[in-house]
Amino acid sequence: MKLQNQNIKSNFFKKIFIKICRKLDFEIIDQGNLHLPVMSKDGHNNLSKIGKESLLLPMGRIKVTRPVKSLNIILRTCASVNMLSQSKKRIFNLTKKDYSLKTLTSIINSINNSKKLFKKIRLKFTIIDHNSDEKTLKKMKKLLKVQFFKSEIIKLNIEHYKKNIKKLNQEGKRVTNNQISNMCNINQSLNLGKDCDDLVYFVEDDYIHSVNALEEMIYTYERISSQTGKELIMCPSDYPYLYNKLENSNIFLGHERHWRSINETLCTFLTSSKIVNKHFKKFVSACEFEHNPFEKPFHDIYKTELCISPMPAIAVHYTNINSIYGLSPLINYKKLWEKNKI
Image (cartoon, rainbow, N blue to C red; front, top):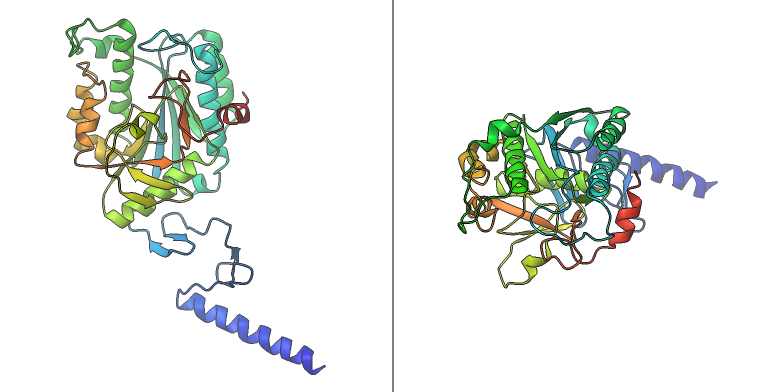
C-alpha cells in the first residue's frame, strides 16, 4: 500500500513539473525511452512546429523567425518531347508522357503525405503545358480533380514569349524549336512566380519526388532561413556532376536531411517570390538568350544568394543512366519509380 502511495505521489509531482515546464516554455526528454512529455511526443516523431520552431535531437530548438505562409507549385510539362537537347533514351526506356505523369503523381503523393502541414499554409498547383496530347492532359486533369488543393492547367503562351528570344545562342548556333518552347515555359512560370505570396516551386516534368519531399523543403526552408536571416534557393536533386569538382560547401541540418551549399542547379528549384522579384531580370535573361551553360544566369544569382541541395536527393531527375546532370547517387531508382504508381 505504501508503494502504491509513493507511485501516486511521484506521478502527481511529475505532472506538476511538466505543467511548470510548459508554462516556462521548457522542453524535457526521458532519455530512457526518448519521450518528450511536455510535447506528448516520442523522439522519432516530427518535433518541429510549422511557423513557430524547428526542433531536432540533440540540437535543440530554433525559433522560426521566417515562417512559410504559402507554396505555389508550378509544373512545366511537355509530354511530346522525349529529351530537350539529346537523342538518348531515359532510364526504363519509356515515353516522355510516362515521366510527366509520374512526376505529377509523385508531387501529389508528397502533398497528400503532408495534409496536416497544408492545413496551416496555403497551397496552389499550376501546370503550364505545351503540346501534350489530349489523352495525357485528361489523365492529368483526372489526377488533380480528386485532390483537396486548388489546381489549374494552363496552356503555354508561346507566341507571346518567343518574340523576345534571340535566334542564335552563345555558341553562334540557331536555337532549336524545343529549346524555344522550353525558354518560353520558364519565362511564363517566372512571371507567375513573381506574383506569388511566398514560396514558389518551379519544377520540370521528369523529376520523381520522394513522399516527404515537400515537407522536407518547407520545414528546412524555415529552419535555415531563420538561422541565416536570408531567403533561399533550394534544389531538391543531388546532381552527380557536382561531385566531379573540388569545391567548398557549407553543411546545414535540415528537417530530416543534411543540406549543402551549391553554386549550380538546373531549372528545377524552390525559392521565394522575394528572390524572384529581386533577380527577375537575371532569371528572365536565361529565357531570352541561350547561354552556355543554359542556366548560367541562375548560377550568377547563386554567387550572392544561398543555394542548397539535400544529401541524399528528395527528387530525382530521371534522365539517361549515364547523364551527369541526371540520376542522383545513392538512390534506389526503381523503388522510387514503382512507389509512384499512376
